[in-house]
Amino acid sequence: MYQIRTDLALETQEKMQEDHVDLKGVRFLEEKVDKNITVSTVVIETENGAKTMGKPKGTYITIEAGNMDEEDEDYHREISVQLAKIIRQLIQEKNEELSVLVVGLGNREVTPDALGPRVVDNLFITRHIVKEYGKYAFGEKNVNRISSIVPGVMAQTGMEPWMVFALSSTFVTGSGQFMICNLWLAGVPAASIVASVAAISSRFALYSASIAPHLRGASKRQTLAVAATLTEEAYGISLAKLVEGEDWGPRESFVLNVILIATWGVSCTTGAIVGAVVDVPTAIAGFVCTSLFICLLFSQRLSRGNVVAAGLAAVSVAICKFLGWTNIAVPASVLVGVVTALACDVLAEGRGARNAR
Image (cartoon, rainbow, N blue to C red):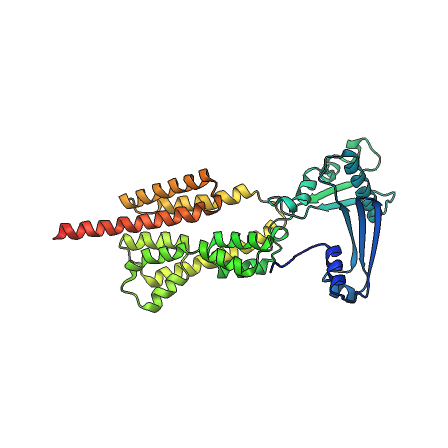
């Protein structure tokens, strides 16, 4: 079953009423402004009420406008009038100048949840102007200072920093972590999330298979330790060193894996904390991963097999993008690249054996 996750006190209150939960310390008011506009107010007055509702004490106001998606300017204007009226009541207009912070909660990448960030995009922010040039820059006697912030990772995923660290330390696949967050936001059941992440992470079996021949002298415990902590970055570095015949073995590979996992966990946690106050464009974050794999590609030994594998992987990405299979483009390219590299290695070994005879 899908788990319904809501931030609205109104929906929580309705669910409690359906379950016949006694809501002591909670008041509910409803005002029908228009036949298609309803203003609902949930007031949580006591600590017991807050515990039952799972929300702090306070006043929670919800405007329901059933026909908001219709192209009706008069109707939209009426909604705006009601919203402005409620905001004035909350602010309680005073003669002195006010300093107001508008927080645009939501995820601009998800259409149903993009309202908060998009509202902030269209606000007239005045605090920096008043601070720099004074209120007379507007030609007005009183000017309210309006500030805004669009929270990042924690507001978009609902994950606290400790959750990010736990996820990063236990799931050593970046693509899997992105998938977990997106599916979690969509309310997908846990079993489906596990199955999806397992499918996209199956490529690690190919990584282990390709690096195993270079660890033949290691014990089963050492081989299992390397395989269980293997990441894409560690795979690229360790494979290059093993192929080149450097003084590199299972112990060095395992230590490298642990260091990279710890660095990944700390970096993701730092990003969650910083991303809560800084809106980092997703295009920049996406290119960071791209640049990482470019560096790993150029660190590999130049051989015919590697060139063929990289070329076919790039072609597979282009084909998936062309066909609209964006979600599987990266896993498909990894699968094609690794299988091609393994096949080239097998052919090279067979050719070398024939030449030796």
